[in-house]
Amino acid sequence: NMLLPMSRCAVTRPATRTIPFATSRSYAVRATDLPGNVGAWAAATVQVRAVSEASTAVRRSSGWIRYSATDAIGGKFLYTDRTGAWMRYTFTGSGIAVVGRKGPNRGRAEIRIDGVLVKTVSAYASTQSGRWVLFATAVDPSRSHTIEVRVVGVSGRPRFDVDAFLVLR
Figure 1 (cartoon, rainbow, N blue to C red):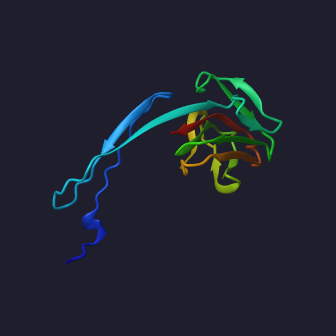
Figure 2: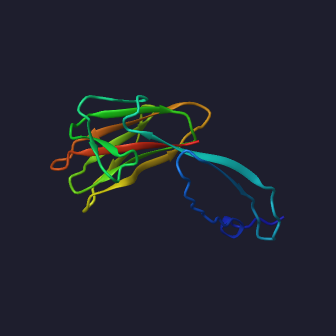
Figure 3: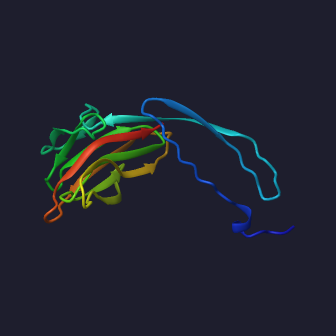
């Protein structure tokens, strides 16, 4: 028997697909190794659900202000400039994302999953625009999780905007 280095055994090819909200898509993949052996098909059905920042399922602290914008997923954003302001959403799925707005006066927020800090994200950009995925991660789909967005004060850039949560099922 001969062992080959992983770089000679495994080649991955990423694929990116656009999945419209509230629709299901089924995908199937199969592997082929270097000698040409083809594996069995593996299939999965995925759905992306957009949860508005204004949903009653989204809990938040005081200090969030709603405003209309044409580039918002549901037509509106919530923003705050209060350090420590938070927004929480409990979900079940295989992935979660936070969509918001970036701009020159936008700051940072801590992202916590089930109470654990997983990342601090920045919404700073030289020009303003919406529909940015500010954070995304995979989670254990067998149980529910809570994501929290907690605003971190940044001198001169205290504002943070949330548009929606995207849940991958």
